[in-house]
Length: 163
Ligand SMILES: Nc1nc(O)c(N)c(N[C@@H]2O[C@H](COP(=O)(O)O)[C@@H](O)[C@H]2O)n1
Image (cartoon, rainbow, N blue to C red; front, side, top):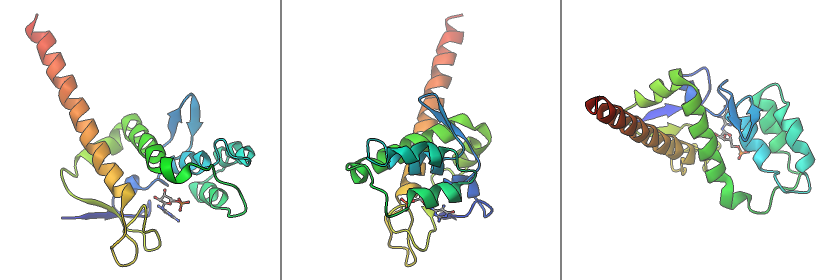
């Protein structure tokens, strides 16, 4: 069964980048993944001055509005790096917060889809033909966390057996 998510207050809302789960990357605190993601659009750009403003936004909606402002100049490599940037932030979120990590793991091998009607890149779009990159990232993060947990369990068992 496919699991659809989108708004924070809907089922599986913790999978949204707008969910109220902070992350810390390179010693900097970000209120949500969305704050971090929107700010990264301007790293090294002539409009980098906006980064601290995005970081200071009180809500992810404000951060998204600021990051989507079409008069600002995005970093030139943004299209090349944006999925890597997003994966790093989403992985950090689920490594930081144990409760939502359990929610993610509880989805087993189900397909996860961001049910955004307007976003055909991160979500599935109105007609479900979108690329669903956020759902794909969540599934790959789920797999990575599972592997990490397996390796940790194996190595502690080995240590116990060595006495
Ligand atoms: N408008 C909106 N509301 C939400 O609640 C959402 N979860 C999203 N989707 C997210 O928007 C981000 C993409 O932003 P850009 O179009 O690249 O500026 C990404 O985090 C989606 O997951 N949108």
